[in-house]
Image (cartoon, rainbow, N blue to C red; front, top):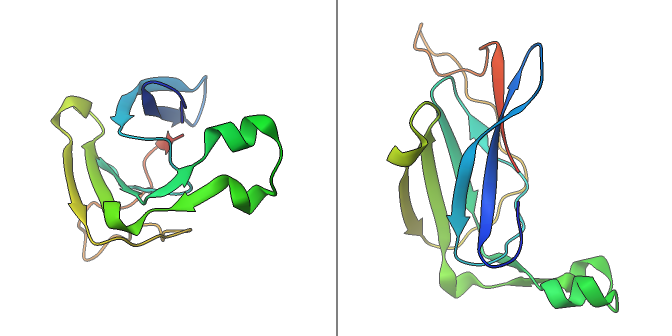
Length: 125
């Protein structure tokens, strides 16, 4: 996550051997708390809830950790689906607000390739 103007989410490939590499960045409308995502062999799925980071409070160090965040449910939750090989073809839409902390890994169901078993893992930071 890169906070500032603009705020963006950085996507990384984490190969089994060698160095991590940056796949690209996704611009976000405001600084938010990002904690988890889903990675399949072909896609990343991110839920960007509107737990906004109050950057000036963090910089000043005057509040406790939880007081540096603000829940904004009226903004909804943004769903971003990103094809790993073609980041520019991502799909974005909003839904009713919800906040998640941990997401399960996708499973292979009857031979369908939708698991995280590939040699290269992907991260969203």
